[in-house]
Amino acid sequence: MDALSGTGPRGARGCLGAAGPRSSGRAARTPAAPWARFSAWLECVCVVTFDLELGQALELVYPNDFRLTDKEKSSICYLSFPDSHSGCLGDTQFSFRMRQCGGQRSPWHADDRHYNSRAPVALQREPAHYFGYVYFRQVKDSSVKRGYFQKSLVLVSRLPFVRLFQALLSLIAPEYFDKLAPCLEAVCSEIDQWPAPAPGQTLNLPVMGVVVQVRIPSRVDKSESSPPKQCDQENLLPAPVVLASVHELDLFRCFRPVLTHVQTLWELVLLGEPLLVLAPSPDVSSEMVLALTSCLQPLRFCCDFRPYFTIHDSEFKEFTTRTQAPPNVVLGVTNPFFIKTLQHWPHILRVGEPKMSGDLPKQVKLKKPSRLKTLDTKPGLYTAYTAHLHRDKALLKRLLKVWGRAEEAAVRCTECPAAAAPPGAHPELHHPSVPTQEHYMASLMPLQKSITPWKTPPQIRPFSQDDFLRSLEHAGPQLTCILKGDWLGLYRRFFKSPHFDGWYRQRHKEMALKLEALHLEAICEANIETWMKDKSEVEVVDLVLKLREKLVRAQGHQLPVKEATLQRAQLYIETVIGSLPKDLQAVLCPP
Image (cartoon, rainbow, N blue to C red; front, top):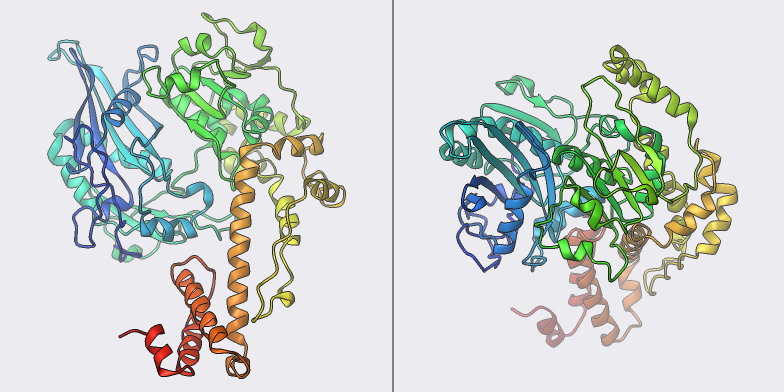
């Protein structure tokens, strides 16, 4: 097994026990504390069962020192079971996302900063929400009063690794339902031996006699990066199961019923529009919502999203109020009651029952909101929105043709790479605006030659929407993207969306850190002794304090600088302090 990288546990890991009803205090864990490595991947594991008198009940939380608030317990219980309208028999896997009732942890975990600084923005740890990954089983059981065995195994995490945790549940849950608690404790102990998730590294994760091999994506990865390569095969027995991705869904499969309108849906998601997804079951609901939100990558999805949501959720009133405009959220539901409650929402996607594998489902139709019926709503996209970009009919025809023949669909990824993914998965539709935005943002960065060691670095120029729109004439996506239409109109609306605001804030922060790093490098390349010759003690002390501040930030992985630069900065600090009188040296370097 790989050695643990970045071994420090989360400095303020939620030390929450199963029984505490009210407290949501988060106590720090020391490096020797139990479950420190476990907590790098999961917050806890929950078991939810159906009690004839109480309804859904939280049967077990593990580790048992993880304490949930009453509101969090209630949310997990309701979100871990399909509602009565789904009728899920057998085994069902789905996911949900819920708000942490205790608020954002403080202080923020040290390894959160380290992980988030290297992970793609879309895969960073959630600071204020939990993901729940559910394996639900409902089978006939004459020994139970209700006549059915109903139980859910839930992995609670702040990492959006849906593929990894679903694969993990497929291994754990069937065994757990047979052997119960001892099996779960053994699995958690195995996870507590895993290396921490390290962006850019391939990790071997042993569990229940299987080694799952995954690669954690890094923000420096190229979009066409390959799945993890099998490494050290001769040292691993049994041979590892290689997981192609920790987070990516099969978008083509998710979008089967909406292929004809995926471009319109992409625009709605890009603009942060309120969107209700009504599906026949939690697995269809959660996969559709996650597929829609993933279409913006590498942009972070900056609005709220709930892959599966119920009328029992503590935020039900907040999302369904009519006293204000609908919130910017993609909401996945299965209860038709939401059609009546949220019929004032501008966009509602009704998805029908899934078809057998290899059979292309009937495509939903675009319908006006006035045709929405509260009781018997047929599948369709109910919206008055008119897309800015024209539909690519040629690509859509290829996609439908491939899906239309089951024998070709089975090998579509090898025979027809261009049609192996829906339009939303193509780079042009994933982020057609990003290259243009990045090119313009780069032009706002001061030239490196203008950064001098002994002056405050120049400021990043402000983003001008008018200048950016003018630049589209000779550098816009319409020149390279297959999609044509009103790009200017789409950009104008995009500027008002939470996604543009989130992207701009993130990029401006990264550029400011880069500027600070370049300034530190310029100082380290200058002749410090020449500069000190005509400087007063006050100026020299000020330089020491500023260099120390930059050094602390750089050592905390906040500045993108090389190790050699850090060593040079430390040497400069020592040189400068050594030139000062003894009394000042004693102040700056107390014993």
